[in-house]
Image 1 (cartoon, rainbow, N blue to C red):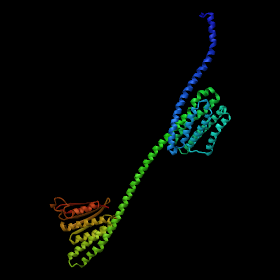
Image 2 (cartoon, helix red, strand yellow):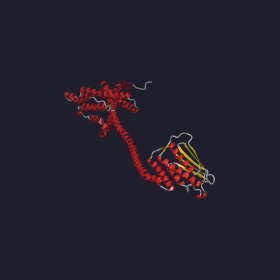
Image 3 (spheres, rainbow, N blue to C red):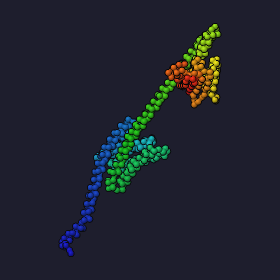
Image 4 (tube, rainbow, N blue to C red):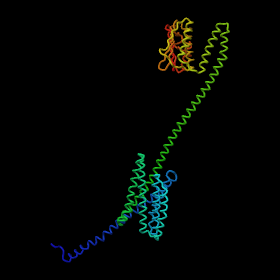
Amino acid sequence: MNFLTAPEAATARRLLARLPLAAAMIWPAAAHAQSQASLYWAATLNGWVAAMLALMATVVGLVSSLHHRERAANFLVGMMLSWVVLRATTAPGAAGLRPLLMTLLVLCGVQYLLRQMNWKRGWIDHALLIQCLIVPASLLLTGGQVGVLGTVWHAVLSLELVAAMGWALWLRRLRLLATPDEAQAREFHLMAVLLLPTMFALVAEMVLAGVSESLWWAASPWLLLMLPTLMLALGLQVVNNVAHARLDAEKRAAAIEQRMAERIAEVERSHSQLAEQKLEQVTERERKRIAADLHDDLGAKLLTIVHTSESDRISTLAREALEEMRLSVRGLTGKPVHLIDALGDWRAEVVSRLGQANILAEWKSPAEDVVHTLPARAYVQTTRILRESVSNIIKHSGATHATISSAVQDGDFILTIQDNGQGIPTELDGRLDRGHGMASMKSRAKQMHGQCLVESGPGWGTVIRLTIPL
């Protein structure tokens, strides 16, 4: 069935014939509108990025002015400001400034990337400065018309920036291979992530400009955003480096303070030791002086009494006083005494005194040879404790037999005096240190950092056990 009349069918055929022409006219308009929208959003984003770059340039400039090690960041500041001004020169009359600004941007970028790696060459510095003069001079010779020459310079400058980025990345890789380090590996990977996309964007922008103008207008605003993004990331890296340097400085300061405190404590200990040594030396000299005075003056007088006195009692007392004086002098001189010699002296004295009192003395020496020494004061105090013990046996015990044994055990010298006498009487209320010089004996043992134990009971004698550290 045919639902259209002949005139209507003819009209429909004419409309269908015109559809391709209408589509061809509508499509460029839609593409243009889409391109305009893309350019609008790119321009808006460029404005925000420019504002962020200006703020970042201010922060990085302050940081570089305060920290000498970040002086190279001044080139990064110049790179940021050049880009901000470059994006702002959209007026037709300012087109001649764009190549000059691009030249300054490349100069600052190349210098920052290379100096960040401590790679500085004088010929590169001179070439970049000469280029800043050649680019505007060549454009002036063309009458201020940018044209093809401006496009050529833009490509050359972009390639210089790409080459500087590639060389900086290569230097980082060489450093990482020379001294592998986890921190350097992280920094290399970060810079690779930042530099490689920017290098690709700069090259792609040049290629599109030579291949297709429409594609260049569509992609160029977005590709050119990679460079300011890189600069923002580099600025953040500078701030992060300063923050880490601050933390490291605080840690080093804390470590220095700790070392200083340790050194001060060490100096104080050394000073205290020197003071103690000085005091000991002074004390030692005074002891020797007193010992010499006692020996020369008092000893001579006592010896005269011993030999000239007509009274046996006075002569005996003078002899005992002379022996006690000699013992005190020996303690004052501070010379250590070999334990084997001390045992010989004690044995001779004890056996002689007990024998004179008709008490059988049994002396038991250590089972093995002793090679230890006693300090002079310890020798004197032990001698007095032994004399006091023998005197108690003779005067109070009523014993007929006494055993004196000595031993060296676990770094201690043990001296035991035992008798078979009547023991200490119970009238002392169970306190064995109230009579017969027991308190004095225990006090002397305590001065030697030892102890003196007394065991006694009526009818089974007394045991005195002296223990002193060697």
